[in-house]
Length: 382
Length: 216
Image (cartoon, rainbow over all chains, first blue to last red; front, side):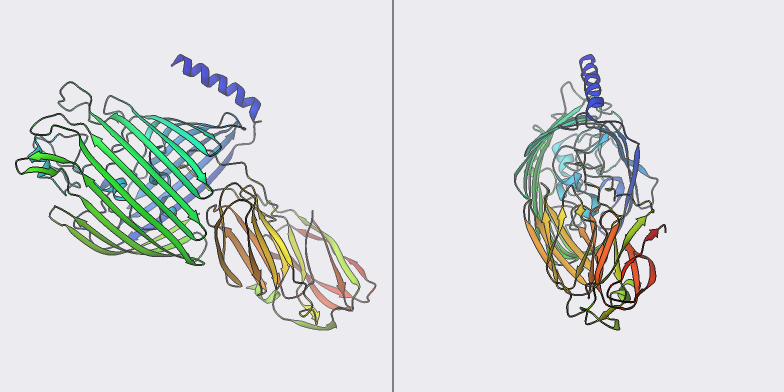
């Protein structure tokens, strides 16, 4: 720690020479969106905080205070469905050398893992929903343990309300969460077409945290390569303590480990993206649960501008789960889900976007196994 | 709405082409026009690159009503609107109808120029450094230009049906070839007509001076 402080002080001294002081500048921005769709009885689009992405009103207020010396403070205050505002992002970003691509960030920071959660909110999402791997609530929980494989399998397809014996019911977590950000430190270095980012944070991908609950840190990293103009490739990895420290745990480490690859290709009026995420969670080995629970998600999406102000878009999306052996034999521990979403977007004026989509969901288990929905979203930003 | 009429077809009895008179002057913009600031982007892992600061005080001076015959002789050519340092440079272009504008990309990142303005709707798609895409502006009017990727990037293209206009360079302007007649001279700055004033050209020899102060 002392070495780190000395290093940061040395950087600060260098930074003074690199960039002269300037008058602090406060820049504000905002985004308001409202999505509407039918009742989602199967909770296919349920995200954190009990909000369904097809029926959510959201307001973001963005602020950046640029104070010179390469230092700025950034914040995103968010309210969903008129709840009390939450701090979605609040951190310091520091670029100590004007001529070098080195950045340090500290606070509630954007994740370095994957590609989707850093996109510019609804504005950069050509559709209404989020990719399953970043949103869909599985039946794994950081604050409750299934006593057996059968108890785990009994919850398949009901991640929005998971009931394990001895615990109050609560929602599960997605393989990786785009609904909230983690708290910690981050460093990024870029050199030509390559960039490397590393972060140490309090929570995990599934359960980002502002407060410490799991007695451990997550380490995540991402390498990004701009292979050609319009083609970006990325690879990410993360591991960190997942289960709450207050649970009755046997000796050992109970981590979430995750890996991802992603690609973005843009040319002319076409924008295409693909991302694959694999995640596994360690649980105590009991009642037939004898290996980490695993999940893998993959999506491909594309957007094409058909005329000024008009685009069409589509996404094919899957989320699969590894097997556990219950009394009925090997079975995926949660119900695999498939989603197809296609739609059209219209920009009636600058800073306004209207989307209409058709969404088809299928799930292999659960009380409700299908959802076919037509939904819309209006987005305004400044 | 006001602008649409200003760029419309209004003829005066004077005949264009014969005149040698000129009007010149300075547009002194005293408005506080800050360069467009990028929206905060908390989701980025890196600091935004250093940006060019387009001059929003660049103004356009033009005749509201042009001499008869001016519409047939408007010069048609090519001009460049560069994209550099995540800014359109210059901030304002004034062109005659029929002119092609080359939108060059001088940045390392992609840009995507588009406009939703009625006189010219277009979307050039994403293109890389060193590439140029062109748009021909045939309809007089005001065209607002944006980048789909960088929301702080914007520019104006003012398309005239005649040749009696000039964009200021360091505040100065000059319009040549005016035939004798009564006109109205207008000043446009940052999206608005700021002032109009009567202009009387008595002879081909006139060298008129009209300075403007833009305070609101």
